Image (cartoon, rainbow, N blue to C red; front, top):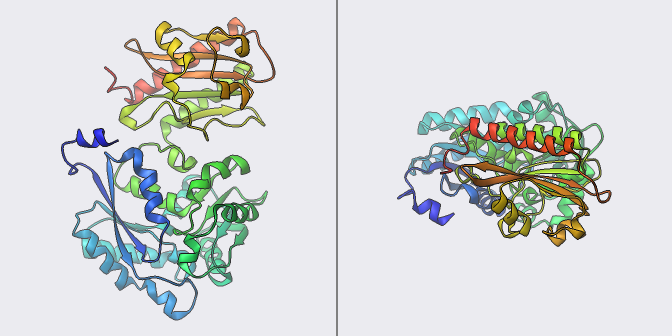
Length: 407
């Protein structure tokens, strides 16, 4: 990361995002820096703080979010010549002022600074609309009053909280210190069969690192306020790069979506347990150690949650780099080139095929087809389906310009 930044000669070309955050927030800033680590040569973030300590409907606590105070915090960000300013707080959702107050706040910030503005609550409504959500489960750390107001606010925008769970806290520093296991419990309680997704409503509640895990467990998207605000900010400064490890919202990209459709088709054609597509795409900050594209049969755990192995050091990948042809293994335990032990022992893979993605004789990625029910004789039709998927994947990557930096 550092070398890519230095290669830009200065930090001037970076897109600059300005966030206004409650002064007592302790989760938002470190989590945002973590999410943006792969984009550290593309984006920088800058914070202005607004005095906030308690989150209740008392007049003095609601008054903490006075428009004039927020605008003054935005003026400090204007001095840094940021490209966008966002109120990184969910007060518009729970103070009872409603989304129109957030829209008016954005107008006031832009009028004073000349910089485009948005808020966490407006970003959440936009994300819901983009993904066709009308019914959601609400998970919040708040006491009853703010929780009820947040449900009402989103209902006024056409989004119904069909289930909810709340932690019952009002001191913001206590919210930021919530144990991760307790956060998981609240998210599970907030879920219901009627909910199309979950929404985490707070930018100081550190649910963000848990989103990937909970999305897999609950089999639905989790919209976390911290991640949603960053998602909107990146759109505002025209940075469209998928980010791994923080849930579907940040990982999603039109190219990724098309590649996932491709792996889903291959899964069906081969009747395999799991298909993964790994890529080294430096221009998009995508590394083969992370699984951005994956399709699984029911009951099969994902590899997307595990980035612990150095993929280029594996014997199977080195074989691909040497031979530049598909590697077909009918019995992994007896294979001449053994797969990693964890793939067999932890994920139960008994047979696999690997198809290299080649550009200018370089292996820029590969598709893996996993079978777990037992050893397997891969048929000519299976191998042909893999070959076709490799060619389709390369066409997608070439058309998107993602391989333009490969020599």
